[in-house]
Length: 492
Image 1 (cartoon, one colour):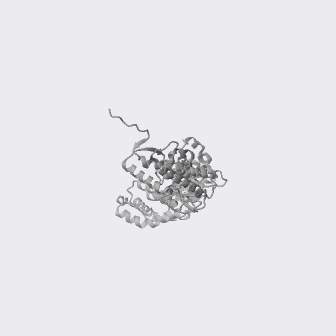
Image 2 (tube, helix red, strand yellow; image 1 turned 90 degrees about the vertical axis):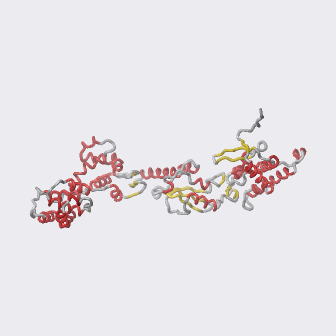
Image 3 (cartoon, one colour; image 1 turned 120 degrees about the vertical axis):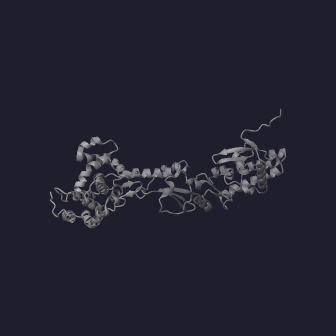
């Protein structure tokens, strides 16, 4: 039986092209060890540290090219720096080749490298052997960053170390903004604001982007920064529609976001939720509807469609002194939200027997039933009422009273539901439909004669619709006269 060569777990046979590329990179390192050294500001602490590292690397190279004798190894100068040791060990691959590579797995992905020596840092070997790679090259320098509290940046052209003072590269800032497709600047825009202190630059993630975002956009700015204190050079703030009222946000709300655990939307919702609770505790009253601050007039206009609903809202607001916060922007949600504080007492005041009909979600139905007759009567109470009216006059009287109560839809339904063969009734109906711009698709129900008489009556009908109480009787009598029913109506 043919013997099989044993291979360590977590390794693989390297493809020829991988071996070739690795050997090429190592030859490049042998010729120029400085490739591994990041650019540093002249005279900085980083320059001093890496000058010593480079000397150690040159010593490792010398000992590789001219191996010392046993006695020299025992008594001579030794390479002590861990990066220089990894560099020296990597050079030995030139002698043996790289038929077998180890596989290292990280959250960022997988990377191949050749194991060499005992006690050598895996990260150092990965960083040295993959010095060309923007991500893996920084692995060779992680312990320097931690030990000296350096700030390092991985650019396309190599690593830059600015020492103990952060100096975020403009190229990285532009790269992150372009990736996120956000504009730089915009201090007056609502959203999540990321400010780089060393660059004195600001980028704003707008509300439209962050409210449903499932990613952490801040991580894009940290992706190519290696720092002991990653957030030191950045300031994260959130500006919402409530920030002018509540601008002091606890730092703990940002902790998960800064750690990369929370998404943009998580942070946004946490801040808005905190601000809403704070606003509720204020003495001043605010109306916050679907993440928008509105005044009482806007609130009434947005969720009332007729006079009855308007009266309900006005009476609730008259008694309610608390801040109202509703995400679901409907009148039903509004009446349910205010039921315990105001709505229940209003129903009890009008008809206490109706309280037993409340089932936890029908507050609007109960209030509408109670207000329907009250509002209708109040809106038309000053208008004259009649002892008896003929069919066409009764129709127009009923319809106009509905219109004055804000029930246009019901008024049109009343006209459509009336079954009559009276030509005058149908002519009055047609004239009213003209005034309500509701003739479309209904013309087939009316003869040419009925439509013609309706056209002649439309101005009088419109005057009746627009009339004041003192004008109502005179206009209705004129209509009565025009359709041949006399000009005297008996008022109750």
